[in-house]
Length: 257
Image (tube, rainbow, N blue to C red; front, side, top):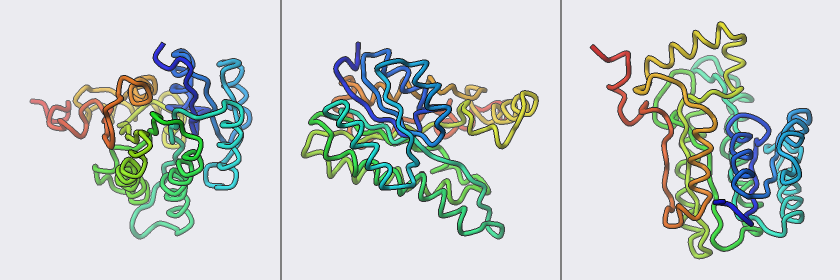
């Protein structure tokens, strides 16, 4: 198993990409702590994943709560080998129609909280550890209405490189996974119901060269690679998991003859 005797902390591990990653890490031999705001989904994750999962209720935007959650995980496991700073939110923040509270909430969740998650975990990270940050293709796309989200994820991209420089003397790697459109609960607000979801997915798929959305499990497999010793010489890198959306956009169905 690729993570035997390893321990991991995953923020936002009670749904979507975070939960898929927790599931895969445990299958690969790790003990995993997840954080999340929702007690019900945390309990469901614990019921599914069993004794090798520690589920901690904490809001990443509450820095003190994050510090307590990291300390609890480190106390339970004795050390941390892997941190996946995954928790994040979307938000529609168009120019001319955005309240400062929403803009700041997106940035605080997606950028500020990521920094303080890693800072809290740094003292507990074992030599040879791995930190993975969750980015987004929106750091590059320029999609209308996504200023705060795009800025926060571009900040994650830049911050990962700084952290990689700072933590290299301890032989701790810092890398970023960059998902494109992925099937997770984040779409529920935009497209409630099966019919609306199907229509949204069909529309997005026309812009993706592989002509589909990704699955959370596909992102989790890349996170596993970055967490494991298979990526022992990968530092300050980004791996994009977007079906070609940013790398080969002209191959999308919308542009085919």
